[in-house]
Image (spheres, rainbow, N blue to C red):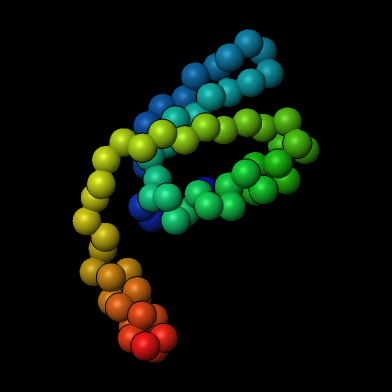
Length: 73
């Protein structure tokens, strides 16, 4: 989950061999996270998601989305 828009909010040790990492990230950056997590952890990793809030999309991403939509129509 490497992205400029991802913020690590905290980490907690759970037992001797597990770490819980809390992050905030745009939904678009976690759409394939399940697959990447399984690959990184040999299938042992777990994650959950919860909606927190809406935020304004950065202008460069807005422009990219607008150009994609214009090219379709």
